Length: 172
Image (cartoon, rainbow, N blue to C red):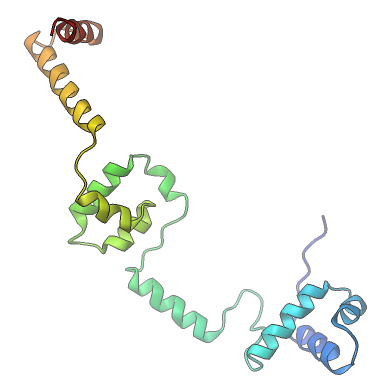
């Protein structure tokens, strides 16, 4: 695969001018310049939209766009979260929603939900939702396990605790 070519602002302006003023098709002008015709069309649209500040330079933004980015970063609290940071937060959605609920007086809910990779609509829906049957069952089972373990003076292991719990369930 070849190396990506970088074009100067002057080249882009001359290419657009050549395609526009020469009276040939964009496809023919692109072949003459050894560039793809879609690239030349893109440059033509950019130049027509903003002739003064079209093609600001390699990796540079227009001044208006720079100001918008600065204001956006300021509104977010100045913090940027790398995309991979969400992979480190391997907890379930309930834990993330719990964190948001606990800290929503400190930070904006939308900002925290974006940082944790959950939807803010889901967070607000979770606030009024009753616990699921599975979570109620899990909490009850956890209480039984803890009770069995404590009544054995913390002596029973996982096998004995599970045998005792399932034996008492079968008897009931």
